[in-house]
Image 1 (tube, rainbow, N blue to C red):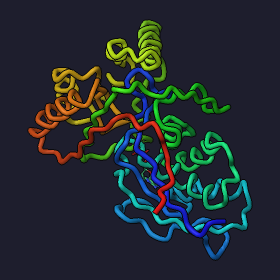
Image 2 (image 1 turned 90 degrees about the horizontal axis):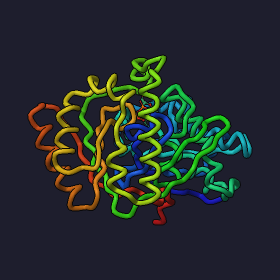
Image 3 (image 1 turned 135 degrees about the vertical axis):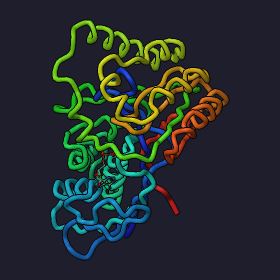
Image 4 (image 1 turned 45 degrees about the horizontal axis):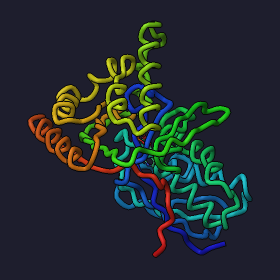
Length: 311
Ligand code: ADP
């Protein structure tokens, strides 16, 4: 067993317009860092949280410790691990803040224990157990991209069946994160219980087109497919300035844009870095009149997922 392991796990965008609950991708930055160290007593504890005073120190309430504990329980409950969380993704951002912590902790614990779980894929269910306490749902649409990188289809959460799609080489994302809090668990309450057949057909056509576009590196098809006729219409009003942000992105040449996760972050996909910078600048200008603080990110699609940081 190593003495300590440091791990980086990236933020991620889930839903990706027409892919509600089944599609997600990882971005290069921001991302959480977790240091896992051998603990003196059995169980996973949180030694320190750096960068956030809003997430719980109680190991039963923090997704990182719950995820790592799930792995420890599976391997040997007598093991003790201390976690230090360097929180770089704001909680409730809609870019997989909780998933990043849950994945980083699971990955770090597995490395610390000498990789008893050989296949990285098999770490997903442990991270999902952590993520579940944040979102109230057992789902992999942020966890799997954060762990594996690239675009991921979650064909099924239970039994787990995730498919790695990789990413077209020139695909970039722009994310605007307004400083307002939307809890995933609250935002889910807005969702319709039933969906008209016509909307379902439009949505599945778009999702099929988006997946094909991603696999064939067909940027035009990606753009034509990025429409959400089911979720975005009910959630858009929860994000101040969503309409303006989306229209600024499309006007500046983005392939498409939509809500990241359940918001409040808004993302755009762009072909190439130059286009991404243009889209980023236009989205920023559009948002400045709202008098809401925001963070913004330009990033290629992260293809590596979670990695150990070697000091
Ligand atoms: P996000 O999509 O940004 O992860 P969620 O609403 O799904 O947002 O999760 C945020 C919730 O999870 C907050 O209530 C937060 O306190 C809780 N939480 C518990 N542990 C963590 C953690 N390590 N990182 C982020 N959020 C956490």
